[in-house]
Image (cartoon, rainbow, N blue to C red; front, top):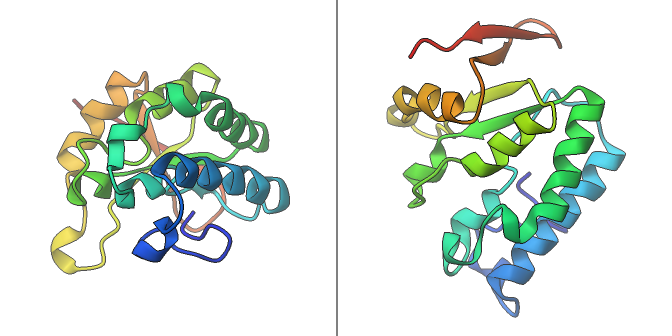
Length: 163
């Protein structure tokens, strides 16, 4: 989820004339709309990507603040048999957590979600597998003992997390 009504939050112009809260709310609403229209994917990436670029980043963000919208997103994913990507790049971009926040990943698990993939947003060679050494610990703390990979097909291959 990069684009929100055709705009990428990466560019500061997305936040012009709106608060972080309004931007985050809009991003989650657009995600819900998109999930209801498109299901030709395996794992939803960048669920709270917008937070990376907010004026105040995580200061105005928490799972609880947006629980209604985030729960709807997670329930749609689970009902469609889709995964949720944990993208470690959040920490590369100044956050102290991956995207989505571990509280969101934990909630996905509580609701019955089973498919979690791991990404790094590696736009440069040095970012390949960025902070993957921390990924297992985060997933275990969220109630997972495995993660998923997709290779050569649309079916998840589950891999046990080795602490």
